[in-house]
Length: 262
Image (cartoon, rainbow, N blue to C red; front, top):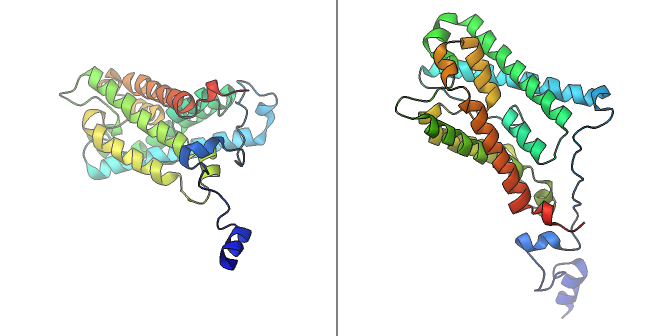
């Protein structure tokens, strides 16, 4: 029929019934995505690039504002630790996961982590300078394992919570998925923010929700009381293990990158 011929000409019936869909379409020859090469551990000339320092400054400012808003939120609520939703890295655990997935160089990862921690420390210090009495009374927003829970429960909560966060970051920013499903616009901050919200619901009663070593370090260092340091290691070890597991799951199980033919 004439109408059917017109549809075929403009592409309405361009693909036959055997056309792969979903995950099967990832290996189709017509894909518009090429797997980028893994980032080297060290990149010559990176330290002389303005973009390198610009990104570090952005991490510092974002972490500064993050801790400032976080601790003010704690003081406004007058109860257990709380975090706002965040995007970007602003988190050494996210940066560590990206490093393991070869998304950035070791030099850049270390620089990001340093700037994140410095920004967090400065943000917590500014809050303390503004409202010292309330800051001391409310524990400075420092993460601790809640009464009734052991160190194992706290560590497990941080591992699982960070795994959910970092895996969601990988999935929401996956360039291959975006290329395959470009007709379905998805804003990365939405799934990431929702994942953080769910993690908070599950882990606030246990650890106050760390899942961000820089956030935990900044609050603990400025508050600087014994209870803030007793279980502080949990808020570094847990997030880094969770981030490592998320990176391995994404790269090996989901993307199967080590098993792809050269």
